[in-house]
Amino acid sequence: MKQGDFYKENRSRKINLINQPNNLVFFVTMIFLLIFGRLVHLQILQGSKFKRLSEENRIRVVSSPPIRGRLLDINGITLADNRLVYSLIVQPHLIKKSEWPLLAENLSQLLDLDLKKIHELFDSGIINNQFSITLMAEMSDEQIIRFKENETLLYGAQVHLELIRYYPFKTVASHVLGYTQYITSNEYKLLANKGYKIRDRIGRAGIESVFEHHLRGKWGGEMLEVDATGKIQRSLGYQSPKAGKDLILTLDLRLQNAAEKALEGKKGGAIVALDPHTGAIKAMASRPSFDPNYFTKLFTTQKEYEDIFLASDLPLLSRALNAYDPGSTWKVVTGMAGMESGKYLPNVLLDTKPCIQYGGHCFPEHNGLGFGKIGYEDAFRVSSNTFFYQVGVGVGSEELYEAAIKLGFYSRTGIEISNEESKGFVGNKEWAEKGRGWGKPGTTPWIPEDIASASIGQAVVQVTPLQLARAYAVFANGGYLITPHLVEGKVDWLSNQFRTKVDIKPSTLQKIREGLRKVAISGTGRTIHFGELTLPPVAGKTGTAEDSTGGSDHAWFACFAPFESTEIVVVAFAQNTPGGGSVHALPMAREVLEVWYKGL
Image (cartoon, rainbow, N blue to C red; front, side, top):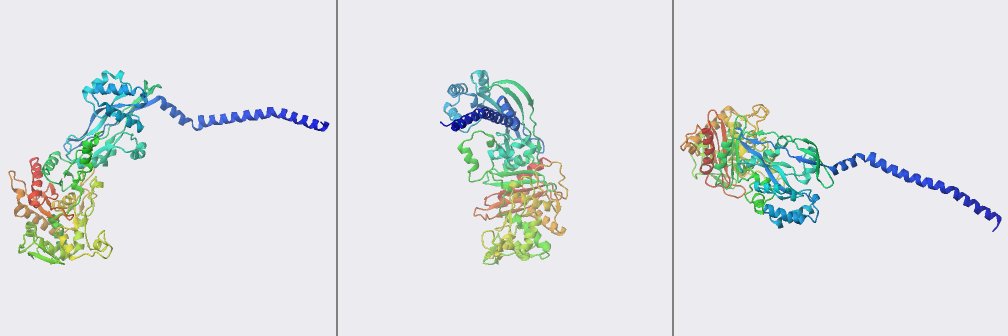
């Protein structure tokens, strides 16, 4: 090896020996910097998160549900309450896989439960990653005692106390009260920040839904320190739940029961009774009905489910808030349009006939003969079709439409549960020319047959029983359109905000009132004063309406009493019950009026 090469190699070795400590220092420094950075991330940047997770590993919160506010009738009778239910649950995280078969066997023998069913429920809960699994929805007193006496042998199982909604009168006023249900997972995501729990219940329909915030209250609970096995070590504090507020409704249970009874035997129908001055609803019943207690059950049969959700008679649909052809009860609208237009004044006399030709159809009088030359009062009394055909066709669809709008038709009434309310329908020329909702614009014009049908509440007119009650209140209270409501609250229901003066001539108002009174004295509604109990003077109108959907006729009766100083308006509706309003609907209204009168 040359001397120069030896020198270079020696020098390179010296440099490497000198750099080795520096490299080691650099490497160690980098390791410490990485560790330090990780510590900063864990302790400072993510410190609060991991502290919370650590706390959750040793702290359990046992939630206490609030007591939901009660629903009371106007006299303080409870319509919706709460009751305690004891259910059997197991918590999978406390049970070893090898321990479950013995626990299941013990529970089955001790509480007389189906062992196969217990295993199915447990397996389903495991698959769905449930923190607690309900094995039995409602335990008897004897089962609770047995469990408590043997609790030390049943580790992992608990008796869970729950408050559930209870409706003591079952189907009574169910469409008004509504019901509660467990919240869905999607609802929970939206409501968790408002204090809702994963197994919370929420108002799903009716008053329960609309006044959810008022009724529900706030959860409380106890913080417990537990060890690694889940055993409780000590309590860290308790906060009492805050009860929801009671709600007093305008319903009178006496009248509500009378309305429910009057609907018995009917295929479907509704009855509405309200105060014509304030709009307070005294009764609102619908048939078929449903038992809201169904929705508080943890387990239901397939038949129970089908009876509620798949039934052809739609028990969840409130007939009081759904729209139907009103028939002759609509003639007050036609009469109002005729007099207000100035074309058919209150003293007009028209010649009624067996039928009148409009377009390609001869529209008949219901008696097939006509009633000679009569005025408004007798036209209401005998419910003449040809009289009101002439008035309706004579004033035109726009005048008829305007009168309907003034009386509150084709709009929601303002009731609190308006999200379940139909706005009904009133056809007119503009609607027809736009295609009637199914045709092309310009291809479905308004024809003479339309206005003739509309004049007597058929085909192109649909109203709800509640809308009809509101309209008849105008003629009962001196010309004011009211706001129907189910809760009085601290509201002045006589203020201009909730009660407006209808633009109607006093002479028109008086003539219609006199005609409705004649109906009850000697017309189609005269049987309202028959019976053992003599009612105060009643005014009203019968109605028989063809079902535009193709079913059999509807029966209607709308009335108010006493005639001079009215205190109550009642509308009775029997769905697809042929035979006439005087035969089917009038007796229903009479039953409600009798209970009202006895209670004065």
